[in-house]
Picture 1: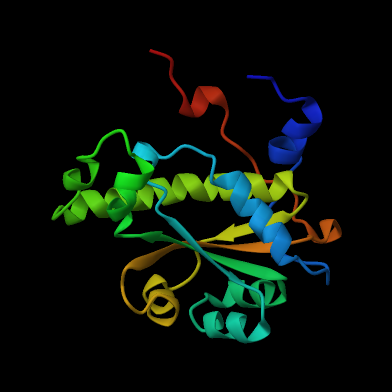
Picture 2: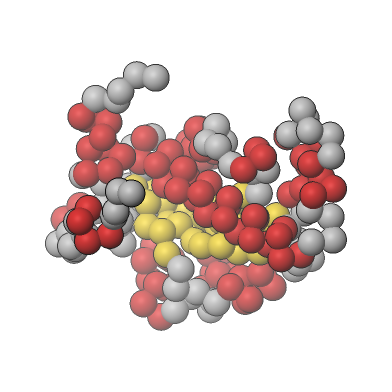
Length: 196
């Protein structure tokens, strides 16, 4: 593996910021497809890939989401060029014969095990959500991930059959850097890590 250069590190991590104010600049469907193409290479356990994404671009689609948002998240979300609803498929294991083809019995490990299904789907869709943010940044987009919303209301509105459950939301677009808050503190290695 090649070590990425400092510019890439800055783009993905050290200079990247969470945006709340957006420029009036469209994000194309082609760019969204490119984003998904990048993130889908990231690893998940047993290659289960439970992430499902709804990209809300139209004002009508975003309005369907508005009442489920906490008041502090409404304006920035309605202004964002794209709002991604990141969810997880609770029947992801049905695809394991294709996605984890070297183990023909993988599907049976999950059948009838609701807690195992849900924890695996939630964990791995969260991991994929991290790839989602990094892929957006790699493509020159800014991201505004958030969890301040009513999951049950989002699921009822966008995933009414109950198979997919919402995990988190992520606003996407080209952020207005002049409106960024000062960067907040981060824990040091010594505060949260231990080498055994």
